[in-house]
Length: 558
RNA sequence: GGCGGCGUGGCCGAGUGGUUUAGGCAGGGGCCUGCAAAGCCCCGUACCCGGGUUCGAUUCCCGGCGCCGCCUCCA
Image (cartoon, rainbow, N blue to C red; front, top):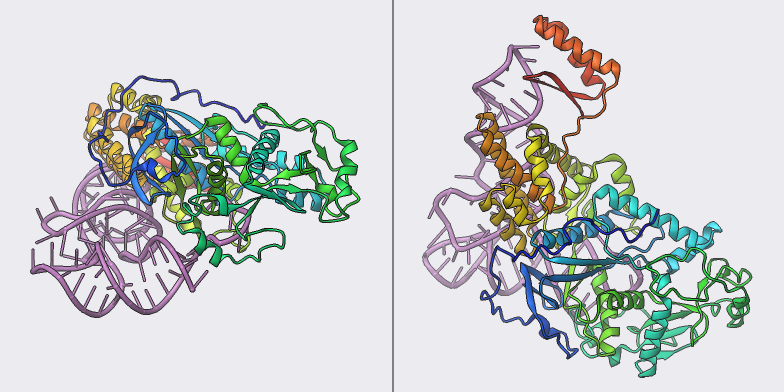
């Protein structure tokens, strides 16, 4: 059920096509050296832009070409969910934003490797397990399943890799050991911490220097921590409650974790779970052995280890929601930098989802679950809503804006009903070259790429698509099939590049409904308008939209 | 206290130093239709306030007001 490794069948093969659109080289210099901000030395030799895309880079605060490590390829890591509850609207937004980035790169002929993790060991998971008297692995498995259901409903393509934290603990322990070995981390009673003072350039993503961050820290430096900004690489278990002995005593029960998931790339061997029920938080504990005693990894360590492990040093792009910028991404980066390893070449962060003008969040109580939304609205409508605004700006999500998006979506779907063959042909064209080969309008494709290349101006791209919808309908009205077809092919191909599938589906009609349709056709043929209108009202009452066409009464679900 | 963002027509939301100033939804008029629906055509003269720069600012600068976020777990 949680098949984490489903690879998108299309789009990833090397088409060998050279990006056709804007030529990024020569438009520089903007003064910003994309790679110059990484004070990590050792720059990879190859450094060429991926297609014509220019993206805002959080680290530099500028929009510049996406310069990649390996020509024609992009490796991207996007921080995935901690599976302790159903996903919320913000999860939906980041998933959609980076799904669109991925798809667009593929559309341009770039080979993308997309990695997005599942955090399946975390305080919140443990807390929930504790509260519900369940095992943490069970909680994580449940909500991971919910997560993928939501992703499917949104039409988000599965990542190429979905590393699970619990499967990487051994590597994390080794990584922490390296940091500790170099004196960059220190051990306390309750864990191992990174000494951020030792990290050059700390504060890059926070957009402020270390001093400023330190001054603004609202947290009391815990007695043990040297600086309030230092963060846990390893959290020891069993120390909070009855003393350090508890967890160790439970080590006798250590066994292979039954539900260990992930890529299998080196799952930690000995894992303890739930054995130490007699100490404070014991029932929900989940721990691994380490040189510092039993414990679990800190959140910031998981992503740096897994991203470097799967994508390699100096991978191309690291993304996530704005709230991950600091401290999460800052701290991931700090660990890599501390070891002198080149980290992400480019940082992308999407804006928040707001509900009633405020950042939605669980703590504020205006938390709205993605699962709820998807139960009552087409997942494509949420995609459209997200796409309509710029990915870095906040978006307002409420009943009205979702309904608005659904209406707009209906307009798009109308093209699929009216020009199904052209739409099918366009949808099958998953790259710009194939779209053109399928007969898409070259100018429109170029305009689309120009918009997308401009820091993913999905709103502008969408405007172009709606313009094409208008053209397709107008041409079809005028009986110009060729023009209508070309516009429709283009609409479907470009919408597809944004992950939007157009659907003509009318909905299944039962026999009774079919009979009503037949009755209405008969009444209309007999010019019995009173009867025809009565039947239409009946159909409408049953939830159908009734349209009279050349072939008689057509109905579809509303 | 430090840092960052936002304020556009009824709503959502792009964008730009000036002339033809996205797009969607809703609304009005028209065409089409038996009537509708869908579609097409036409319509909105918006840019928080006050200064400044400029021949000219919604767009640049300064100040103000309002709203939001990060600095603590958070996509």
